[in-house]
Every structure is written in C-alpha cells, then in structure tokens.
Amino acid sequence: MEQIISRCGNICSECPWSTFVRKKIVKEDWGEYSETVKKYTGYKPVKYEWEGCVGCATPNDELPSHPFFNFLKKCRTRKCGQHNEIPNCAYCGRFPCANTVASDKYTKERVSEKLGKDVDDDEYARYIKMFDSITNLNEVRSGLKDTQIKNPKLVDHKKEIPELKGTFKNASFKFIYDILIAIANSNLGIKGIDTVSGLELFKERKEFLWRFLWLIGIFGNINKHELSIDSGTLYDNRKPISLPNNEEGWKVIFDILKEFGIDSELEIKTDKLYTPGGYMRAKIPKTNKPAYILKMKTSSELQKYPVFKALNEILSELQNKTGKRAFSNFKKLNLNPLLE
Image: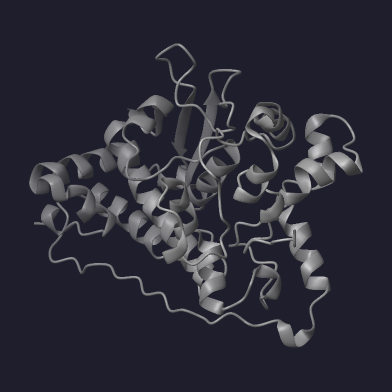
C-alpha cells in the first residue's frame, strides 16, 4: 500500500498501533510481534482487541468513538497541521520545531546504543523506522520545492491575571505570590508560543504545573527549605492531569522550576520503575510502596522565607475560605480571598 506519513512524521502505514498493520498480522502472531516491537521501542502495542488507529489525517468527525482516539483529538501537532493546512511538519517554514511531538529517539544509532548492539537495516526497517519521525520528516522535506513550504499562521496569546484588591497579611504570602506571578508570566520554557503547537504545549504545561504546585503544596512533606512527595501520593491525587511517563518528562518540569529557584530530583526506589508498556509506575509491584520520591529544595535566593511552608499555608487558607473553588482560584492566581 502507499506509505502514509502522520502529521509528526511517524509512518502510519507501518505503525503497530495502526489499523493498517493489524490487518496484515493475524491475531495468532500478535503476541510475538508485539513483544518484538517492545524490545526495540520500549513500548508494547495494546492488545489485539480492536481495529487500531486510523491515522491523524482522519477528520475529527470521522474518527471512531473508541477512547483511544482522544489522544489524536488533543494532539498539538495535529491541531497545528490542520490550522496551517499542511500534511505534516516537513511542510512548515519553522521545521524543525521544538513544539512538535516528532522525536529523534528512534534513530538507528540511538536504538543501537540503548540495546547495546548494532541494529541492522532489516531490524530498523521492520520495527524502528516508523517511529524515527524526525528522520522521516527530513526525508519528506528534502523532496519538497520552496513553493510547497508554508510559514505558520500565527496566533495570539493573552495572559490574564486578576488584579489584587487588598494586601497580604504577611510578607511570606506576598513573596510566594510574586514567584507565582513570575511563573505565570513566563513561557514555561517554550519557544514559538505564537504557533498553534507552541500555544497548545504551553496550555498543557500550564495546566500540569498549577496542579503540580497544588499537589506539592497540599500533600508534600516539608522540612524547612526542603520538600518531598512520593509517587503514590502524586498518582492518587493527580487528576485531572497525567503525570510524566518517564524521567525525561520530569526533567522538563524540573528545568522550569529551576529557573525560579527550585531544584528538584527523583529518588528511584525500584529497579522495576517502568511497566511493560514503558510507563513509570506509581508503586512498586505487589506492594503499596512508592516507586520513586520527588525531592525539592529552594535555592539560597529563595530562603529569605520558608517557601514550601508558606505555599502550604496559602493553599490551606484558600481551601478554608473558598472550598471547592480553591484550586480554580489558585490556578487563575485569584488570591483576593486571602487579602486584607
């Protein structure tokens, strides 16, 4: 069949999660095939229980109703391609863009390094190339004419923060508020926030970050200028966000926090940190013990006040005064209920 390239450069027509491949591989062979895919990619395709992904070029109103397709509807690269009316990122004037979900994790060289052996051409073609999205996009780009490449249609982004109508009861509350304002006014480490993909990534990070700050402020164990919280507590209280799938995902968040004076690290508590599907566990298998501990410490510049203790006091007081609206007020930085 004709090769089908996704918005982000994956080869849909050869993807183990696609309906195209599931029609080629019989159910009896699926177990061995999926284990082989996991060997090379770290992820095991879902069970052979439905037809599979129909590809991100499919319009929303033609996508099957299966919950699996929610990820396509939310995909920032897909939204950006639709907005700019281009088949995939290779056709964009800003390619390669840091905000695409395209990745260079699955080059032949990087997979070989991960496995500790040289991957041959056949292995690469059968199990890896379909996910080597940046390489695939570069191949598409090399065959395009200048007239086929389009600059993205830019979008506006407005940051609205409620005006304070009073004063905080103590200096530590004001100190925390100023840190939160600085975070809210930043681009959260994102370049190209004027594109659909950049803005969508910003929204994702913003939603995660405010919930994360809420979680550590409410549930974290505080010891002066240090805070710790275990993966089980994070997981049990994470909704409506999803936690990072891997250590690399956590590093993105840690880098953002470091910019504002908070150093973070993961203390891994098990050698079975990842599930067979390649995702970080919340708890050690067959126990109720956390799979990792997240530890945070404020820099010397922030140690004028006990930052974590003050954050906890702000959030607790916000809960007492506004009840179910507390988190909504917090993520909007509406701290007026705490003012005198």
